[in-house]
Image 1 (cartoon, rainbow, N blue to C red):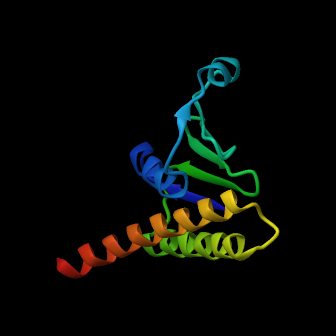
Image 2 (cartoon, rainbow, N blue to C red):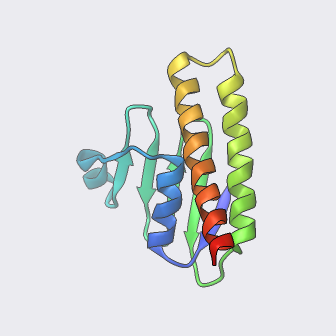
Image 3 (cartoon, rainbow, N blue to C red):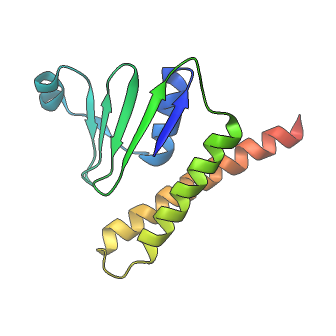
Length: 124
């Protein structure tokens, strides 16, 4: 999946929705020459300057930082597709329990963010 946003700050907000827990991997960062973040679930985030790549082990998400961006509606659509993918993961009996729980938590994080955005939109 690919997204486009205007700023690094907005890109990291999306990262936080998809991978809420991560720490900088100093060793991997020094080897690669750019910041790399990982977590206990094996997910990796690479900050490449003009884009952020999120590798969940099953899927790669690229968030491009560009002046030509996607509309909020397009971003919302992509995040809803990600929720569906995570829902399928969560329902899969083939995955270990830990991965299914992680998928459930990610669904809740993304859904709550989308709901907060909608609530702010309707309050204004």
